[in-house]
Image (tube, rainbow, N blue to C red):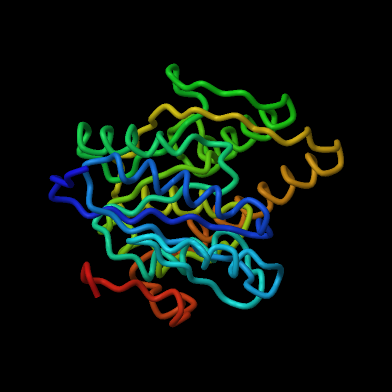
Length: 268
């Protein structure tokens, strides 16, 4: 398909312990990207290359525009996304969870919303009226809990912060990524709340198609997930509202990691 957009798109796929399915996931996303009008790169980032054979399996996919990167030990989804974002080239940077619970065709919908609203961030949302979702009640409870946390604790005025499909303008990431700390549970909450705090308020939701294929969580696991998300969100709130850690004046306090340093100029 002819690529006739002025915007270059980076699509990031974080992966952890998915040696049996990762090649199928890559081909599915690749087929979707080949149908859109945007020139693109696809970045598969493995969160722990020594954990299993996910990295080796992904490297067997010899596709144009595909990069497979990673680091030896598991450090959390938030770290994986930041690691890949720092190496991305696009002026639009999206991420989609591997596992294919979310239909990758939703990438096109998010891009259209990004252009239509001239948005800073578009968030795939299970709560959008046009979304088609199938997932168990315990996941709905966790999602609702995350919504309450994000709205009343962090002031994020969207209905679903946790779905694994989002797209950002590059200028947002350049400002936000150096300030972030969360590597796991509340990465989405942190990046959205800090973006809003820095004035990137054009954050909108777009519909997705989701089919959560795994069985329900145990009661203990579900409670642990909610607890860990709340704990990380409280830490974000404390840094944002009490310490003012994310303010420009506190730049010298930000934790510098050269592996997560954003390449400012597109194409570098």
